[in-house]
Length: 201
Ligand code: MN
Image 1 (cartoon, helix red, strand yellow):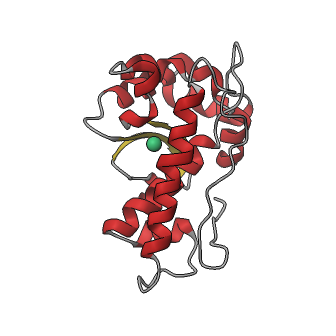
Image 2 (cartoon, rainbow, N blue to C red; image 1 turned 90 degrees about the vertical axis):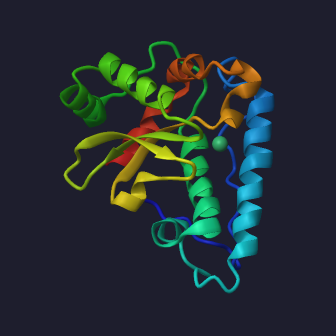
């Protein structure tokens, strides 16, 4: 996958590839503004503050996630997770489905796109506490759906992360309050499947 490298020793807040209100009504502008501009910015600030003397100075974000523990891991993991999360969305589209090899692999692995969505939502809904549900690919291109607590990312297990739903409450509470399953099932029209396919190939 792409590597994210620091500039002058510091990681940067990723630029959103869409306006803060572009994902409405599925994700509201205030949620995006807070989630990206406050939560993600804080993880970036915390990692940058923790890097000097950590032994990870100058390393790529992905390498830090795979090799670190504790506070460095938590902040590096959350930056990587959110970069993948915010980078996978686009304006809402009706009939939004994957195409090409990715669609064929989803059908082969999970039976159908509908069965995949159901399984992915269920894995997100049943993750206790804060964390992430992931679609990732192994070295053979086999797809996996996994739950990761807190700042976890399947890259640590050698998998290539393709798609993720954030189930931390900050991702949905303003728009959906406690209704996590309703939030998860609403996300499919804003998935940028071209970006997910790019990560897959
Ligand atoms: Mn989040």
